Amino acid sequence: MHHFTYKNGVLHAEDVAVADIAASVGTPFYCYSTATLTRHYQVLEQAFANQDALICYAMKANSNQAVLKTLAKLGAGMDVVSEGELRRARAAGVTADKIIFAGVGKTRAEMAYALSEGILGFNVESLPELHALSDVATELRKQAPVSIRVNPDVDAKTHEKISTGKSENKFGVPYADAVNIYAEAASLPGIDVAGIHMHIGSQITDLMPYRDAFRVLRELVVELRAAGHKLRHLDIGGGLGVPYDSANDVPPHPDEYAAVVQEALGALDLKIVMEPGRVIAGNAGILVSRVLYWKVGAERTFTIVDASMTELLRPTLYEAYQEVWPEREALKVETPVLQDVVGPVCESGDYLAKGRELPPFSEGDLLAVMTAGAYGAVMASTYNSRLLVPEVMVSGDKFAVVRPRPSYEELIAQDVLPDWL
Ligand code: LLP
Image (cartoon, rainbow, N blue to C red; front, side):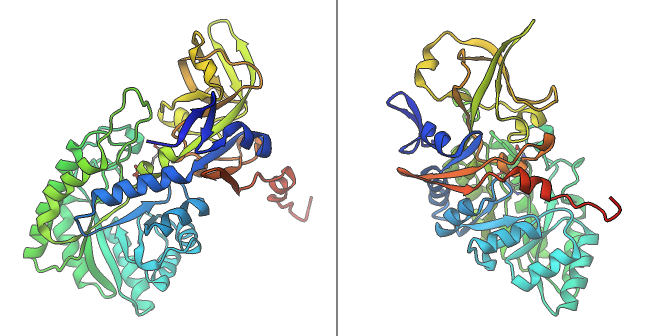
């Protein structure tokens, strides 16, 4: 559920007309809803209310300070994958003891910074990384709390580019090696074995892969306990899907997900850490764009808009489907036209929607690409020397620009000429 709805025939974000924001900040822009973010966080929190659980929001989904602060105020921890994300989380007021550091390629400098901050844990993805962390921690006279990311070799049944839990993926250590790696971890100076980590993929819409993965996790806990390890937490990753196609997608409700966790892992008496990203931020944001031209080609009709793959890479990178809503509700009842919604970037892959029955848009119309709150702004680029676009946050009848549009001068000033030119 989200708070982007039609009121008086025009699209609103909570109580603010999207057209009013467009008039104030220009297009394109991302628009986030505080009420939706809050709701999604709280639905998840309530689902796990009877379990000892910590929600570490996977801030790679959307790391705007206003988003982080909104969630931090609700009590969220953070899952970070770089020093940059760790610094952003700390800047938004998240305490270090609620931060988990994941990712296959942490540098020694990043490890040192995270150790100096005193984070809750490192999710370690290989033996060489474990040794590096042991070195860095020993040098700093610190103990690094560690979970080894174990690859359970299950198929998350999602797009191949966002599937992570199969043995062919670069993530985690093979299950068969886990017991030996834990033994080695326990023997290394500076390493404090704290838990186990698993994450099988993203945009998962079926609970079965989770059931399979959690079964593997439970077996591993039993084995590791038998080997004498004292575990404190289980990090079950993220990945819960959202309804990109609201008429057809029915992802599991957080309550159902929590029940699967409880059933598989509840008896182990361990703290559950989870890393949801998309399920919190996805439907809390839209990308608003203005129609530049309506072009009838030889074989196709194109709605050419001022947003592009530089603001939303998902359609071209993952063939992702995202709904497109007209800002004027009246357009919804007009006879739809088969069309592509495309941007100005010089790539055939630059589209936001392809082969879709959508309203006959006119120049100047506004439209919204829905479910753009996760993996939208964070994956943006300045390709074609396009400016990054503003991020706006709405709360009730108020809105604020939470990242302004840069100027062309700022864009160009990022380059520095060598002294021979
Ligand atoms: N934990 C780990 C270790 C992850 O790698 C990820 C996502 C998450 C948590 C959060 O997953 P979520 O709950 O958001 O599904 N750019 C892609 C998604 C990449 C996800 C990468 N890892 C997309 O737009 O679909």
